[in-house]
Length: 203
Image 1 (tube, rainbow, N blue to C red):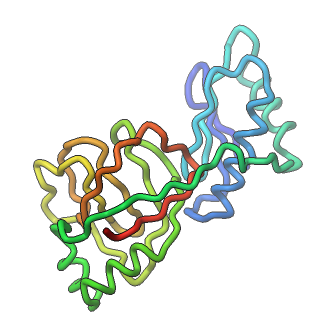
Image 2 (image 1 turned 180 degrees about the vertical axis):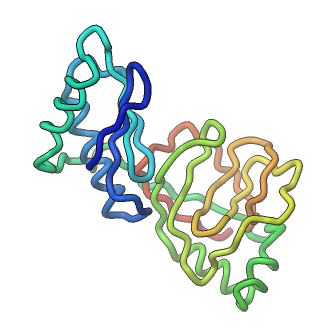
Image 3 (image 1 turned 180 degrees about the horizontal axis):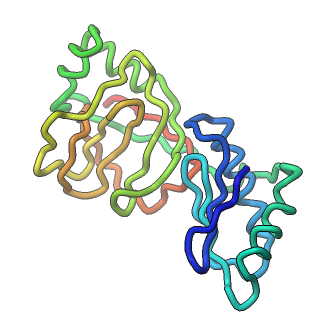
């Protein structure tokens, strides 16, 4: 664990630099512990780090770092079950604009790609790019596919896509270069939180 200054009123806590369930759980355990501190303005987890905004009227830079270090050094694991949800999302894979591309890139059939994508349980590792855009990982190695060489000028809201080893759903119309596997009517993007579990179900 490394704690570095981010700005005049924030620090970033870095854990092991990898995308894994173990590291994500460590981040979430730390987040729950940090909630017990007074005079913390915001706690933002992402992949393998946490951004902590604090009240500079109560902490200076060295004090907040020492406070966080003392709190987390013993890696006391808080109960995160109440803050993590399981979400099931129905997908119409017949509308997958890049389903054939993903299949051909990985020497699979379209049916194989759909099965592999729906067999996996994903975790929300970060939320960004746009409001409600949840980065879901990890995609099974057998369907990992790079982004499009030329991004589309418009990707429709509800597009279910993959890029490299991550999956996502576009929460609104946007430019984008992810491979579109299908479409969904899911519209509760504001409910996503880091740590949630997501499964896709083929219509």
